[in-house]
Amino acid sequence: MTDRMVKGFNLEQTASFIDSHYSHDDRERIHAHLPAALKERLARVKSGSWYPLEDQVALQRAMAAVAPDPETAHRNAVALGRHLSNAATGTFMRLLLKVLTPKVFLKKVPDIWPRMFNFGTFESDPSAFEECGATMLMRDVGGFDHVDAVSTGWIEAVFVAMGHEDAQVASAPMQGEDAGTAYRFDIRWS
Image 1 (cartoon, rainbow, N blue to C red):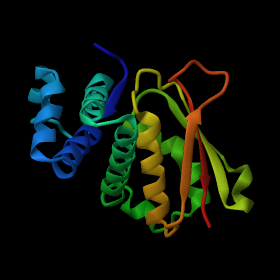
Image 2 (cartoon, rainbow, N blue to C red):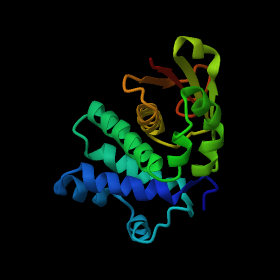
Image 3 (cartoon, one colour):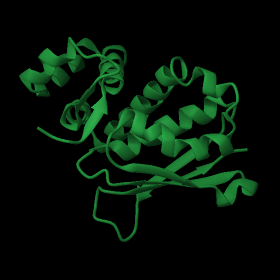
């Protein structure tokens, strides 16, 4: 059993994304890639309960496996991030969005991350606020395949929800860190 856990909300919304985003044939192919125990567990997932990170990784890997190329897999992961963000902004983040500005959001991210994941960190560097930009740093996420692309979409959707339709988010592995364990997100908006 793993000690790295994700909230069921992520699993529920990933399953919802798969159901709404993919064709019937692709959904069948995705489900064929999933472990039997996960398929059984998905029917009983509770949004507020904790589940092994491997469940979320299996869903994201299965999505990537049915993509015709890496670029499509990346676009689908970004779209999943937007879906997760939109679902969150329609539920537990709804009140927060009423007062949310980029500066407040970036200050709150370190508090939001642990509500969904019991590992890793997501921090912000607000030093570029005057230039309508900021940097976010995600650490200790090794083994969480596609988290950079999903997080890119999540951040973009939050900025859109705040009224910054032109927000741009670029992610890259952090220099000096083990591959796949840490990412840098550069955000620009007007």
